[in-house]
Image 1 (cartoon, protein in one colour):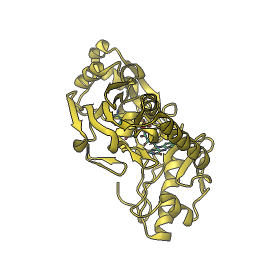
Image 2: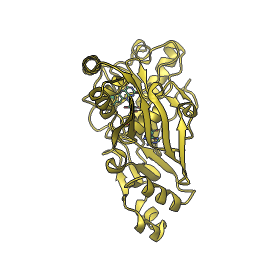
Image 3: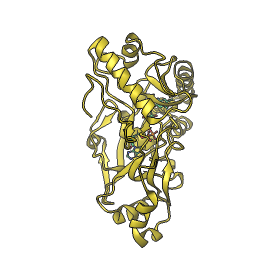
Image 4: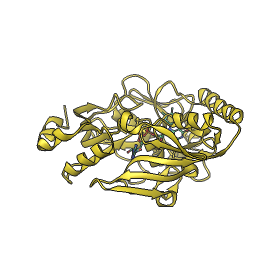
Length: 324
Ligand SMILES: Cc1cc2nc3c(=O)[nH]c(=O)nc-3n(C[C@H](O)[C@H](O)[C@H](O)COP(=O)(O)OP(=O)(O)OC[C@H]3O[C@@H](n4cnc5c(N)ncnc54)[C@H](O)[C@@H]3O)c2cc1C
């Protein structure tokens, strides 16, 4: 049963949509967008051609229509009832560029893969970006999540972030404005990041290459990177590793329907076949409950959960879980 109606929403936007150059897709499959390959439909997906096209669209979108932005879906769990309103997915053509803009400075579009910025930095002898080599997301996702690994994180490299708000106004944010903490930014949730400037430091290319190789080898050994997954399911609580708490609570390999806590890295949830959004989220809440019962610690979701439940298939936070 469909919970969203993209054709109706599209029709309600009127003739203004004819001036858009990007692509509008009613009832767009989010299975195709997310790494989990699970979940319902986006009521209406818009892939803007460039920043001006994005602004035109935002100015004609009524304020009451919900708006969600996604990157390449490597940290997303979409619920089976779908995502009401509009989902913005930036186009590679308009937002995928990466270029040098000064000594040790790189400018990257928000849908540029993290890997590309690592490669550009290596080619130009700029240190500080090797950690991006192992993160499969986009720069927009990295800016929102303060993505990091191997001792590096986005907050250390970013110097300027360009964004557009819900009304279509442009903003430029400094690193301080971004208010970064662990896997979090204090920047307003209604901002769509369009591109950012990053700064590294001079570094020997062979050294950077070796760091990148080490990042790749480490990932291939300890993470289920070839599976349908969303990366780390839960944030590390202060002074604890989420995977250790999950392991100690006996949840390594735990299954629910088509979802499983990976046996290789038990903070990674995987879709082992045809998991629904419900299977995945229910499993996550089972884990939170067991960890709370075992260690008295409330795990916090790192994966972003989007959209609405199918009627009768709601997942409630389990005992001890924080209200979100
Ligand atoms: C195998 C695997 C390994 C991973 N390893 C790591 C790791 O080591 N370290 C780490 O930090 N993460 C890791 N992740 C998680 C994920 O790759 C990162 O969180 C990444 O930054 C998400 O980027 P994305 O483009 O996939 O964003 P999405 O998953 O599409 O979205 C994530 C969030 O970012 C927001 N967002 C995306 N684009 C924009 C934009 N342009 N403007 C505003 N908001 C935006 C979305 O609204 C959402 O809230 C891993 C994931 C996988 C599958």
